[in-house]
Length: 115
Length: 113
Image: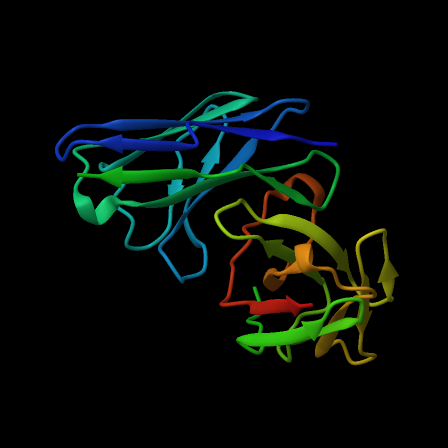
């Protein structure tokens, strides 16, 4: 079945530094990937839609200059949290739509802790 | 995409059927009903989806009312590993259109021994 690999699974970084999270579709090509953020005890919140070869589309209230998204190939999208602060600590999850199918496959998530 | 309403939590005895309801009274004719679940600290897992006919796969059954305003996800023999948050989502289908999945609050299902 379709697999989406997300790396790293967890990361701790210092306040003010940047962190890059990778999302790869391992056995299919994904022209569209999605990035979500989830705080404890809350649901997933869509941050942005990542389109291969074009600029990402951000949801209202999400700072595009802080959360940089790059979708340079059909199998890889990256999310960079720039100048991270403790309030950016969260669970970040990516997903990709399987071609010619209706379902979406999700990565296993990245736990970011900013200290 | 239409909004969904689910009970915040439910309990189920191990081995019994778990019936998770979802209301989507504003669903449009071209919107599918999707169900995902999220086990703690993992990414969501696809369960099943349907348009208007009842659907069944190896994981669950989906029963959609005739007016499509509500649906029920049925886990026929719940196990402890089915303890998770279950999300009901409606969205327009469309192959490569890349429509967004917007998550509501979901139902936290606790399967008890």
